[in-house]
Length: 410
Image 1 (tube, rainbow, N blue to C red):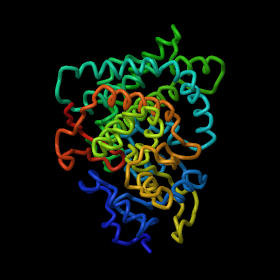
Image 2 (image 1 turned 180 degrees about the horizontal axis):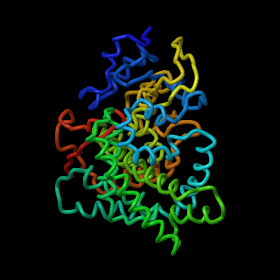
Image 3 (image 1 turned 45 degrees about the vertical axis):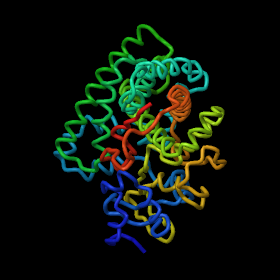
């Protein structure tokens, strides 16, 4: 039994350089040896098996509000320093429980309706092909910098109503904010580095919001202003905060997913040829990419009361870390889970979450992925990895699966 006070968690350390580069061997050991255990390195209980993760994601006794307990553990000086960050992130739907989560989610999810997304498809295809046009005449590329990074940033910017050409600024802002919550240390340097983009992003979005007050367009901010004008309980601060969340989460995950999915295909040429020869498989392939090497490794919850999972007593106030990456490789749910299979019939992964916090941007991410992977395979039939796979660099991020670069030839 690996409860509080055990020191065996070190063999399941998910923050080592080796685990950052390839967490799946550690996940496999956790699944077979310690599917529920106290992990000092992660700061709470780690839950790994698919059935347990899905159960926890829909359990109302596990709160999505991790920020209030976090703030209570900070020093007064740290709380004051983090005030801009906490003021914004505490309004993100991903950090809210009902009824506040229900209220805000109902207002924003219409921005991801099939009608809205259908109208965006041709624009996403145009953006993807323009980025690939820029690579014509070249023989090599960093596919992260040249394709995976700009495409989702441009798309989410245009969805909100911002300028696609500002994508580089969005990426910079997002990286600084994500770094604070990924490293697991709240140093003054990291706090200050995250405060700056929060304030700058707020100012930027405030300008977009004021512009849309004067002239509505077909974007999410215009939609939110319409529902606000119709009397919906939505403050400007909540609108700004949710748009910041969508800018950060709406492209950060898709950037990483394009990178890891392309890498997966480059390591499985038979699968790549199958998809290239039958593009109708792309929707199923996208689900397999998310299961096989999805961008979000884990989600966190806070126990709102004492609960028990597989004989382990989790106390009120304990952090619960739900290992989505492990759950998606659970052999009890996915036969031969370490094999990429774009024709796999079992598609019920937890890459987009589960329950009321299921990712509201999932339909957009799926469409972006379908377009991106189809365009890559069609236009780059000779795409190859330019360096040995074991030399690829991964970001120091325990939460997200992030390639620093993907050098390719074509």
